[in-house]
Image 1 (cartoon, helix red, strand yellow):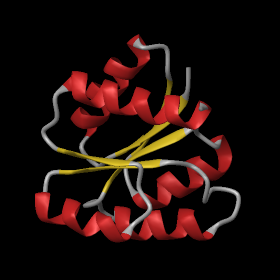
Image 2: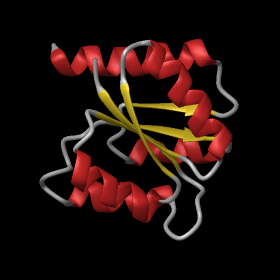
Image 3: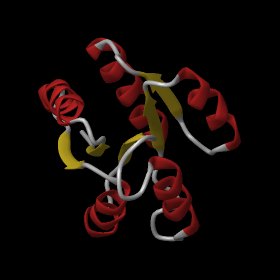
Image 4: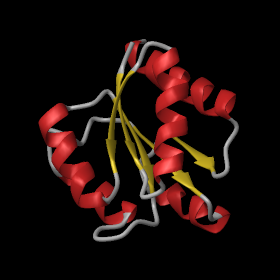
Length: 122
């Protein structure tokens, strides 16, 4: 399956996503802020990033911007995860594959991740 980076400052969200996606056969890497997300993306080159927007140190907006500016990571699809629906509306200006509003249903998360990965493979 795929290697997925789950980025959220809420450890519970990371653990729920990790458990649900590992059952599907995905390899999960986690990060808890934008700086860590960038470092792990550059080191691990995941197939997909699940990115929260509101985080300490560096928020998801800045992490997204930096990842898309760097040619070696710009191609990696990103699904935004946010508890704030008004922020989700702002993602229309971003090149994101999808967005999920927290709290999310586990089946919804799994289906959306699998759909993005399937689309990537053609």
